[in-house]
Length: 160
Image 1 (spheres, rainbow, N blue to C red):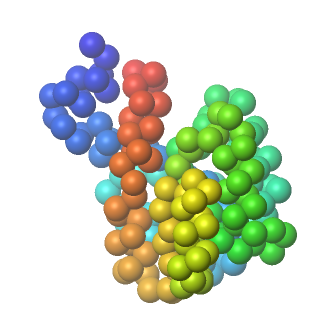
Image 2: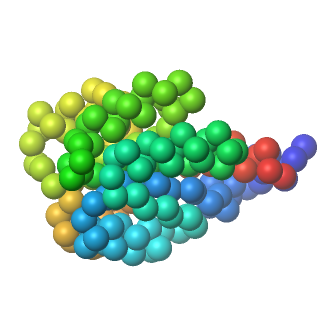
Image 3: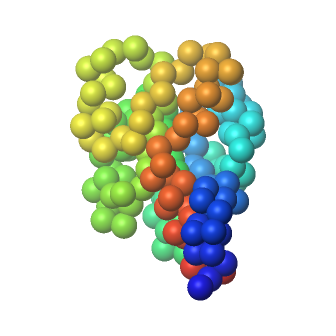
């Protein structure tokens, strides 16, 4: 039995707490990027954070990182980028077979239920409304979908 499997069965939840998430933040607003970075630093899990400011840069990074054996565990994606919409990037991610199950959390400044529904209909794991409230963002990121952390635990299992 490998180390991660031992932790998973012997101490439920420990493997997830020990996991390190590799997070890609796609955000073109420096203030929102800083807020997201600070909110991630407040989490009980550790994370490595890479930031890209355009959709094209983000897609290039995702495909390169995955092909080099350093996959991203979670994407935090701004719903409205300067070069394209977050929905377009979400659709592009979902169209790449080896990224189709990658957890993508949409960050949006819009309170539009129709937009949030569109994000979810196209495969978003969660939609978080950007309010500028740091504590609210920390709370939202603390409750990321379980599949985000589970994918990390599965990835880490191959390391040990």
